Length: 164
Image 1 (cartoon, rainbow, N blue to C red):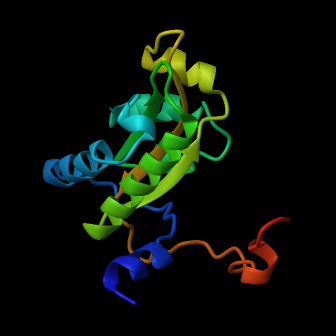
Image 2 (cartoon, helix red, strand yellow; image 1 turned 120 degrees about the horizontal axis):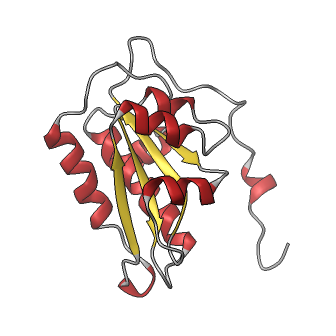
């Protein structure tokens, strides 16, 4: 297998970060990769809100249930679905953000904003925009590792041919 394939297989959420800001070049590279993510009908009906301020990160963390990585992050990118956008595209862009971050030594963790209306209000979104997902980013703390949750289901448990 090539390195790209192995990077996809090895990607894991990291929740523990050094308490240092992201280098501007690293954040720009991650946002550039996000911008180039494919989208349904190439509409690119999304926007990205970069949250770096500690107080704003703490408020954003209150909008979800498992958001300690947001509080600890150097930056969190909130994925905004614009009018007529597709939630599926949020997943695509989140994965690209995570893969790009990993490629340059930045750790990441996907986040669900369970109280997305609160997040929308906090971030100044309009009524026709939504933000359910985000990606926390930071340089991995010493000894940080992905939490293991028992591996993966077998292919026979997951893959069905022609019908379920």
